[in-house]
Image 1 (cartoon, rainbow, N blue to C red):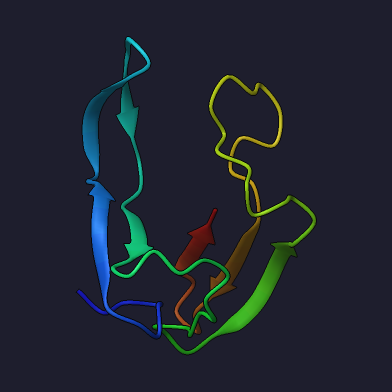
Image 2 (image 1 turned 30 degrees about the horizontal axis):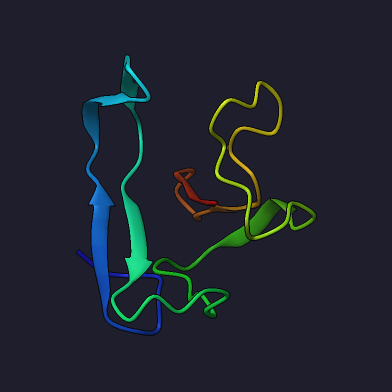
Length: 90
């Protein structure tokens, strides 16, 4: 996997079905954290394209748990020349 993190990372949640806080649901992403626990690390794009949408107003401490709005937190969407959309979400 090509990582958007500029540091060594570990996967904390894979793509697929998971149980979180007693609720079983499909997880449509792969959650990464820096292996050394660092937060606020710079990201790099893993594809060439155009940034088509972004949000950067949710605090880094936001987890998305028990929140019904802004569940994806901050994000950047990149659209490639052939129409694919790559999403980086927090």
